[in-house]
Amino acid sequence: MRPFEFHRAASLDEALALLARPGARALAGGTTLVDLMKLGVEAPGFLVDIGRLPLDGIALEGGLLRIGALASNSAVARDPVVLSQFPALSEALLSGASGQIRNAASMGGNLMQRTRCAYFRSHDWPCNKRVAGSGCPAREGANGHHAVLGTSDHCIAVNPSDVAVALLALDATVAIASPQGVRHVPIADFYRLPGDTPAVETVMQPGDLIVHLDVPATALATRSGYLKLRGRASYEFASASVAAAVRLEGDVVAEAAVAVGGLGTVPWRDRRAESLLLGEALGEAAVDRFCDAFLAPARPTPDNRYKLDLARGAVHHMLTRSRPC
Ligand SMILES: Cc1cc2nc3c(=O)[nH]c(=O)nc-3n(C[C@H](O)[C@H](O)[C@H](O)COP(=O)(O)OP(=O)(O)OC[C@H]3O[C@@H](n4cnc5c(N)ncnc54)[C@H](O)[C@@H]3O)c2cc1C
Ligand code: SF4
Image (cartoon, rainbow, N blue to C red; front, top):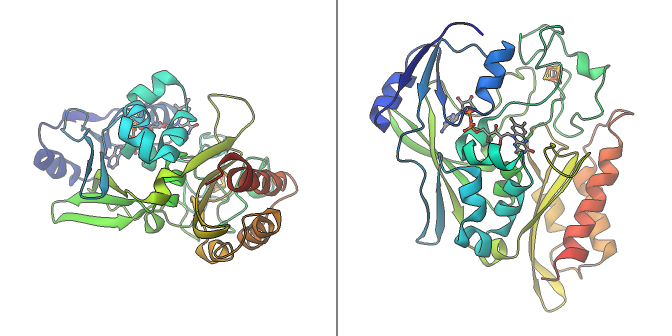
């Protein structure tokens, strides 16, 4: 691990001032940043510990659930309001990592975690995300866990966050503070496709700090759920996951939100595909039409083509079998 300076911020203003220094990086729970520093994949010269800032609240107010960036994944997952009105959030969080890691892991850190692509995490290989222009060995190499949606010639790495998928289905907004003030970015616009700059993963600018997330409290959110399919029952990232919510009027779909994880370079949602469900009876045929449209842009490799079937099965399960709305 390379030497670095460490400073514990006592206030939000101090944190923002420190983060404005070149090479500065926020440290929250440290569950993934410290790993990457030990691997030499990340080498910030200056760590700003934000862990003592009062950014861990979880409160429902004025029709919005506000979740502080430092609320732990465990605290959010077991919050009574989240459990009763935003079940997809709780289910997504509980499907991630382990109990110990969830206790230390923050919501802001979860959104900012890096891909688990093995080439990215090893200096034995080139990687465009780690060293711009060095190449992407995953394209022709071991890519069974890689993305099929949103890929580019430069990177096919999957976004690993579970809760980001649930937040996308629930139309959450990310509040980002900088010395210039706070801006609110819909999570649908927060992540960036790899294109030819795969190292740029979000709209965050140097010195920015996520301060909270806002999730609208809606009838749809109350009906939401999360299903994660993976190689083993716990402590594993998604091969395919689905956050879904549907509201019926009579026998037909009045509202639908479906986001998918494990398939995209960013958490993936397709409103045009969702619109195919509206006004339809929620049966196998309508869900098949949704899946056909949703998966049409996929560019699988022979080794990750199986994800298309996993996602299709998970969407069918969530929409027609698990939650009679
Ligand atoms: C073994 C293991 C298994 C895991 N399994 C899963 C899983 O199945 N699903 C899943 O979704 N996640 C999983 N995770 C990821 C885990 O959820 C994240 O490590 C955790 O949420 C990161 O939070 P943190 O507070 O520890 O972040 P840190 O490690 O402190 O920081 C991570 C990154 O976020 C930045 N950051 C932190 N807070 C902020 C902020 N407020 N504003 C701006 N930037 C910020 C840091 O600068 C750093 O770049 C796993 C992690 C491990 C180690
Ligand atoms: S998929 Fe992306 S992260 Fe993985 S080796 Fe290629 S460029 Fe690097």
